[in-house]
Image 1 (tube, rainbow, N blue to C red):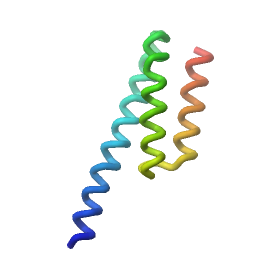
Image 2: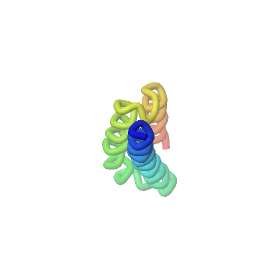
Image 3: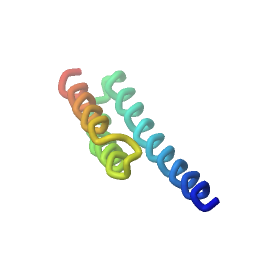
Length: 79
């Protein structure tokens, strides 16, 4: 019973972290598509922060976070 409560709590936490980084990534991509590069530059540190937090807490794997950061930064450099 206790394990079930713990896993539900952890799942909710992980889903919240995943949704946060996914929302920020989506917002960043919309900014790039709309040619709002200043907005994208201010969003990038927030995206990095949420990806690092998700990777640190094992909501996503470290490699996935690194890959996303690399690709998003490449989008910003080559519009």
